[in-house]
Length: 414
Ligand SMILES: Cc1ncc(COP(=O)(O)O)c(C=O)c1O
Image (cartoon, rainbow, N blue to C red; front, top):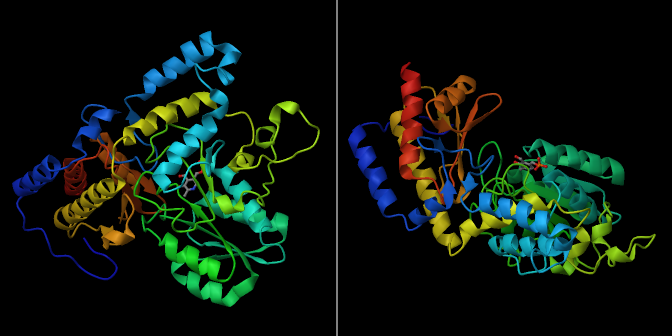
């Protein structure tokens, strides 16, 4: 397999020794028992947890309980009654997610979709820097982030400039104190490249700008230190590495120092200081609660609450080490087994520049990905020629990585 800068001539290792290496690495994995916390279909190698995480074993019962007992028996009393306390779920869950983000309690809430929260947060961030003219965002950002940046720019009269994160320092120098907001992803959704959150946040702060991070491909994939890195705002989904389920609600992190000034455009009643007083005008809640919007999607939140239990007792540094071992081994397998078959590695080889995903390029990606899925290896494709394989260290194995590379090799043999 090639990268843009090198040609790898590996491939001499016999097949059996790859399997032995995979088995040895899996046997030494301290997180191996966590796989039991997920319900994975027999025979399927699931490498699409960077799109939709696998089903955590605790979720079906939690949802059943939420429907049958909390809703069916508790009825409306479940909003505040001890049997459920639904009303505080966005905060309870926010703190659980926050713990995985390096955020002290009462700075993270869960609710609504990532897109809604990106909009709300970008506007709130820009309003903290009135008089500045530029919103800087990633030229390779996920489409919803790009569209919403444009929309926010149009609404607030900001010039939206798109740069790649490696050009960020130059862009900051160019805009200086005209830069209001810098909005970037922690990991590129297409290439799997991981960006340096603390360094880019510091750079934004040096010119007094506000940094907003999209953590969709980072939350639950590796340790984060949002408080220590002095991140301003972060938004992310919970259906990828957090395995909260299809359409699981987003989270929003707002650094405590912004709580009193932040002013979101979506001033829904649940973010009001006194939601049940039914005032005619909006007064925001004092803390991060002002980032709440409307009635929480309780059934999805109960699924997410159970899903997050899969992280109980897991040291995120150990999870990161396992994740890098999985992606590194997959890259090695691809180097060896796919050499000369038209694949190129898109994700950086340096471990610190990867998240949990490895992206390959191949002109036949559009047919290879579904053909591999038909043989039990589920990944996904991105136009025009990318194959994405996401590794979740809570349930993926080195044997999965080897099987994926072997399956692609077999498909190329015809
Ligand atoms: C970086 C990034 N942002 C946002 C989203 C999706 O936003 P939403 O949950 O609103 O569909 C995705 C989905 O894959 C994503 O990868």
